[in-house]
Image (cartoon, rainbow over all chains, first blue to last red; front, side, top):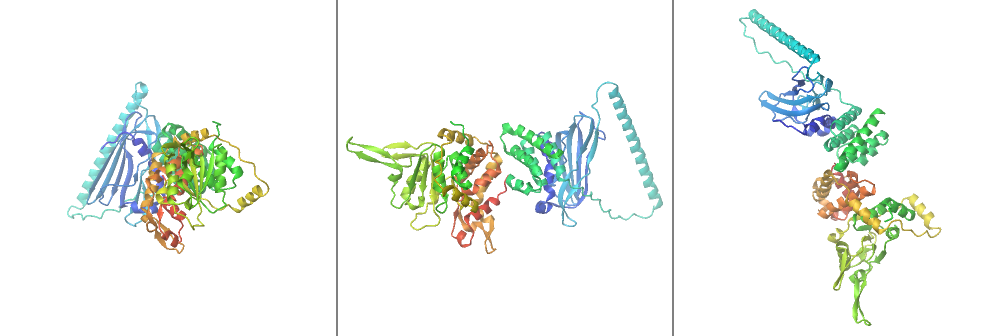
Amino acid sequence: MVRIGRLSASVAAAVLTAAALCAPAARAQSLQRLTVQTFTLGSDVGRPQAGTPFHLVVTLYVRENVAQIANLELPMLAELELLGDERVVRADSRGTTYRETIAVLAHRAGTIVVAPAILAAIDARDGRAKQYYSNGLTLQIGAAPGQGIADGVAVAASVGRFAVQVTIWVLGGLCAIALIVLVFRRRPAVRAALAPAPEPLVPPLARERSPRERLRDALTVLRAEPTRGTAVRARAAVWNALGASEGVTLADVLARTQATEPSLRGVLVALERAAFTYDADLRPAIDDACDALQRYLTT
Amino acid sequence: MSGATPADLRAALAQTIVGQSGTVDALLLGLLSNGHVLLEGPPGLAKTLACRCLAAALDGEFKRIQFTPDLLPSDIVGTRIFDQRESAFATVLGPIFANVVLADEINRAPAKVQSALLEAMQERQVTIGPQTHALPDPFVVMATMNPLDSEGTYALPVAQMDRFLMKVNVDYPTREEELEILERFAVANTQPLRAVATLDDVRAWRARAHAVHLDEKLKRYIVELVAVTREAQRVTVASPAGQSLALGDLIDYGASPRATLALAHLARARASMAGRDFALPDDVRAIAPHALRHRIGFNYRIATEGIGTDRAIDALVAAVAAP
């Protein structure tokens, strides 16, 4: 199912909502019990080009048979335009494969860093609530294909890379076939017993983002998506970074942070305004919140 | 219009009234929300003084009605008397025709007098004989109740309590405030309060408060706050004996939809008083006890278990997550 439009906000907010996961014990009751086997983030194109759509693919394989995967937060894609999203969940007796394909578009050449996807779940092996992180991605975005020598060089380079890749694949395939043949020649009469599957590698738990990093994420997201929803999520992320529990009000957070972080007051007040003001005042309120966050982060 | 703000009015009241900032703010909120305020507290806590000062600071008309068991409805709303010289009935308007009316010890009068007052509060008009008279605008009733002396009182029915926008508990001043009272009032009479705002200012403040933006999330929060008073079984509170009690067992009935409206009006008024044109969760939470206190039917166990109504309301408010 392809969902287009308003995806930016939902995906961009992933990092913000991920901040809410820093209290795993409190949310443990709502987490799924999963045995995570693989959790990866990849791109279908080795070197995407600006102006040409490509796909980011989040793949998760768990040992349990589940109908859906909950509490999976996609990475923030503030520098990429989101074009669509397709989610497939396949479950059978051996486990469940979750695959989410996000169509994106880069508008400028350069390096774009995509943060890891995050999954919150209870590890079925030890019963503890954990956050699993996929690998992150560093994408080198090439210049948009155009006319002139530069484009010709780029196309030639692209063709060259393709040729090299094909060669590597062919050689690799031949080596694999040769290896198989050798193995079967050495033990022709013995029927190989089914070896137990190796213990799957569980991706290491990534370092939790610091409160300051979370505030920086909030600023990035607010600037990229100046909407009410983003403002509300940025507010929640900042509160969470400050250790405020859900359901409290600004007065509680101010009282809590007054002693430790007096300079945060401006940020909190500005975000509160952005979350609750009327529509005509929303943009100025978000601009003020961004300025306040920027000021705080530069101090 | 003088261009004065609610902050100017508050500052003027603070010149005469020591402390009691909660009471003063409640009176201002009532004024901005076009609602009536019920003040409950022991005698001598400047309830009457606060109301008198409010009227004086507004350049409005102030009337005080001392409720007694022999009071009649006509003593409040007015009556028609026969003028022998003119050979016709003439209407004499009662003390309710004022901008700020202090109904002192409202629970000392019987139900029919209370009804006459509360009907006027609701309809903002009074019918005397064949004529209907509109009450002045602004028209705010500040009623007081004395919780200590319940001999010879007529409890206000809940349906009538509901007509009050808010009920404020007036508490004793702090030691510092009491010292200030001593220094300010024991020496000489204070200067009478000058008017700092006009009635037109009040009407403008009300219009501004009415236009304050109330976000959808806040509306849902308000509805949840009122709903939890009707579903209080899921909220627990610890008794002084350390026993965990379900609040549902201490409440006979929850707040009415009028409480929902009151919360919205008061949240807007509070935001406007703070100079904002949008309300915040803090506005709703701050005024929630005032708007809910007199609208929840607590049963006898709230007293026998040693849990005050305010503690129960705090627990109800805390049970709803702010947006």
